[in-house]
View 1: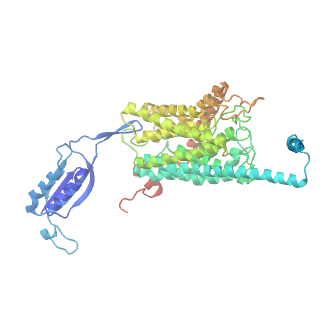
View 2: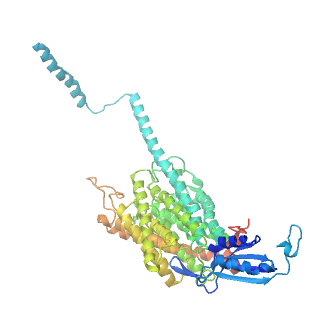
View 3: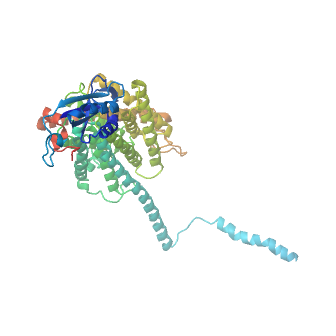
Length: 112
Length: 471
């Protein structure tokens, strides 16, 4: 089992969700996040003082998928989230030890 | 046939005689007791009608001024601080609503508007003795004195509440409450007495230096604004200021609060006419014009300087205009109000952008920059632009023409009087505030601990959180 974490632009959330559902992934967790990579922030002005906002709003999607879904999942996210500009985000893939369904204690790939 | 025509011609003549007799009727002579009683009853009815119109307006105005404190100021200030301090900030203003009301009822009104001497009223109206429903001819002759008292109370509430902007996010609730209560007795009551109380040395009617202060530019904005400066200098900056960014956590709340301040200010200024007559209209119109011109002035200055017009700039400008026009509201022509507003927007924005950065003081919510500076400018501009055509405050001459009031009428001396009032306001605010800060700080400690400041006032002072996003 693999955990796929994607940090994306908030405006792309609907498109990415839709793309994931279309390839059969129904379980995911969405978090509101702030962050940046190489993308520079912007300035805001309050009573003449300049504030540099470098923690930009992002959305993080986390999902656990079967090993054989790895490339399909990555391609779905890339296709839906990419704009071609700095700030598009990143995808991280890691190994998961186990997954357990709380309702009935199912374990392993049956649980995801 | 001829006799008929002659009769017809003579008929109007016969009718004219009684008509002429009535037209040149002699003046009313002594009439019957029944007529006199009826006249008295009619006079009373006219008086009642006038009172009912004036009292209705004044009661609404009192409510409007209270609206300025809560939710006006609570939202305006609340949105400008960091999220962890929103309740603490709101509580500071709300505390004034509770405490100042009681203090005013017990002794405050008496100290401000009692007879006393030139500087402070006496205790003859302590516990509101003698302050009933009959009008006091010195304080709004057509409204019950309790209406006047409750209206003035709302001013006494908001004045200390304004000061809280200077020491936002870093003062203990208990010490703040004691400090501001004492301030209202030691600084606000004497100032109100000197300018508005019978026998006050700055009272426009009979004072040694008659000061035009229609709704409290000196009594409210100068005292609170200068005190605010003293407080922020004494207490020092917030931890992390100015390196750490501390932007407003909710411009939305501040925007709503500013709208309520603007709305409520009609009660603050137009209600200071103490009647529903044309002077109230003047003050109402001037209030609107100054607020609008100032908002435009501030936004224009900031647009040129920083490249974008901000929401915070717009609402700050409007408040600056409202603070500046307060003193002049019932004395100047509408076009003068536009000018006053424009000046307020530009000068106050400069104070907040440049002067604050230059001197480095942490007047967190710009209580000095907006109210102190606005009030001071308003005091002097009133002396320049007051016109007898709006408010014949010095009476009229034998021909019925208003006597000169401000410089624009030719009375340049009034500017000197305004300067005296301004000087007294500044001095009383500085001395009184320093004294009280010292006393309260040494006995109770004013600033919160570093840990409490980091945790935020909501948690450290009140054990609450303003927002519970997980609830």
